[in-house]
Image 1 (cartoon, rainbow, N blue to C red):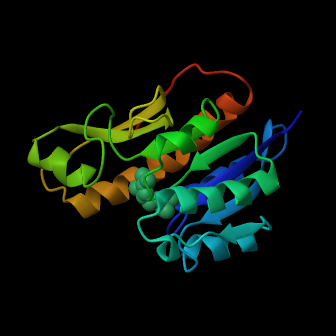
Image 2 (cartoon, rainbow, N blue to C red):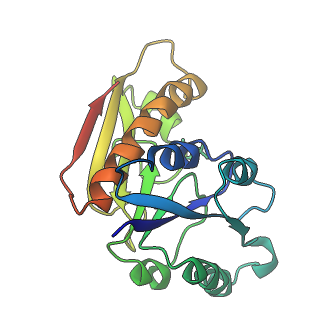
Length: 198
Ligand code: GRF
């Protein structure tokens, strides 16, 4: 049975495009919805061009009421009945109540070699630490921010003249290779790690 995948974005959605493009042919999943918390996210137009239904649940009107925002998000998601949710450049922190609803069915890509550098500004932190290796991780989403079981990682060497921007730019193509590879396995019920070297 083909798995239904909803993808959550906040911005340009380059990881969403890579995921949607990968779900073709004998792939066990198909994208059924792209949702953004920012109605102006550039990724929404990209999803529409790819023929994927889109929605936006603007978090701003809800203010600090995370529960109300998540209730609206949940309603939007339930209407599409996804089997799997992929967070792809989704920049809102989700509460344990929400993550519990999708436990074992929600993935995220994070731009660091977890468990190093959970949270924000990962490239700058890796450079400040003098790391010679950096990368990205795809993990299951749990109540612990960026803390769920890791399903795949892609690594690259840090060069001495790297800046946070050059590192992010060199890492993004690796993300676009890693996330689809993990999703294909995960949708097929295979949780064996994917490890890539850039
Ligand atoms: C990427 O670096 C991803 O790791 C992080 O958000 C950034 C932008 O992703 N989660 P996208 O281009 O919006 O997919």
